[in-house]
Image (cartoon, rainbow, N blue to C red; front, top):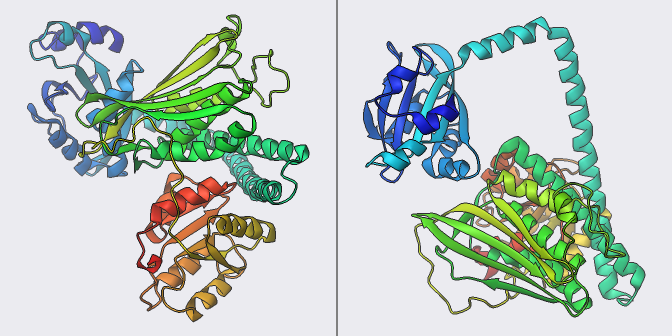
Length: 536
């Protein structure tokens, strides 16, 4: 029905087409003006929807009756998010629960583009909003659950047991992989750097690290939406990927460039981790199929779409072996690899995982390739910009440099000896002195006995003997010291969901997820670098 309405619905035809009582109300929204007109409303509706008004006022009215997170509901319902979703799909749906007259009602709110109005209406309202009551559907679902109570209860218990095992397994894999990768990296730099065995071991560990992080990124997005949104500058997105691949490109005699178009806004609001993972996957694939003497270019630019909204273009081009036409049919399938390059590491998951990440951000991805000439992969993401337009510094088009970290002294709390050595080794390479502690009680005692502003940052492992990292952070914050508000970075191998991140953000200044690289540590330290008076 919605497909028919998309092309046929007009204000006069609403009451003729729709049987009585299907929808609570229908709104025609003028996106450019941010206004709406109510063209249909169910009789005796127990809550009021004005006949016309400002869309944000309509949204606030629903939030007053909402049972659930107002912030998440508002984020899902704002017009910028709706428009972004409708560029890649036919309809966009939000499910919510409203408290009305001492009762709880479940609503399904659906957005579609009204192509009829886009072609014929002078006002050009281009979105229709349908609100349907689905309380009965929820009720019937609960009845079925009760009828199958014993079986579903056992299934739920088994699922919870499996989930706990997976969480434990992920924690152990991440912890061990951090130690393996970090130790190999430091060993290669300090002892026999020409050893081919060490090179192979580091590359294999890094491949496994990328694979684990890609899968976990997808799991996090599937469970919790777009994840943590941060304000970042365009060139900041390239700093981490460049740090990862600069050494490999130099070793293989491949010219790796990062180029930038003139930004539209000073900051973009994106999930930094996921966008950087997309870039990493694209560059990794390009390097894998490019021979020595070749070139890989990552070009990043913004295109103005509308006020506070831009298209972020991420394009990676290489001069590698390209792809045969027959392979393009399977290029997005898992475990499929271009077989003409012998000795290329990988499982064939890179492009499949990248495509999944892009789709979860409501973006698009395409490939242009020519056999024996090269390949270009282009990703387009629609993202929000801030209120400040970008002011050119004359650096556009140049490669990103490595920004120094101003932090000088850190207190590290980590109960695993191997991970402690790796973490302190990374800090030492950045010129940061590190004091070691191995449990929560010890870190409290050392901090208590130190001079005020002696430490610039604390890296706190979440799970430790004695009191936990979370408890230790709380006790540090409550100390009557002038430096009890110093930056604290939580270090964990747990799977971070939205709730955990929000809980951590109250008391800590950032978090570091195992397995981490030196670039991860540098990135999180740069976010707090210079913001603490203990750095002077």
